Length: 190
Image: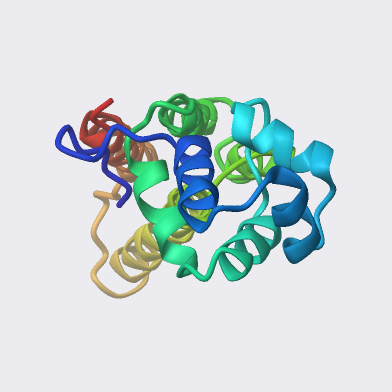
């Protein structure tokens, strides 16, 4: 799960890029030429105006002779660039299962697709949230099929008039999903 840490470094991604470029003694124009990125893109990234995509970050890391992880990991764990709010929104969008229970995971998937500037760590965390909701839908269907099987065997072989009502497992799974979503939200520490 994606967890924000309080003791993470406070330097933002754009500050790290500026710092690395200056340590190498490069100008923005030289970095743009080495990384095959436009000067305007470098200016926007360094000012914090835009968040670079993964392939741009890789090109910058290569041009600055630094590992890609030096730029991607710490900048995404501070929560200072709005990623924490995006993950909170993603978790809250999972509550759409109350309205459209069988295809509700499409709402957070649409939000992830719509989100333009995001780090690889946030994208991985978002995909994990969506996968968890997809697993919940599969578990819900399996539990309802199990309830059907138990009711069928009770009526066919045991002449038992007591049947398990289908709303009980449904409400139980709804409660389980609410707990999953709320615990995920609680683990996000801005």
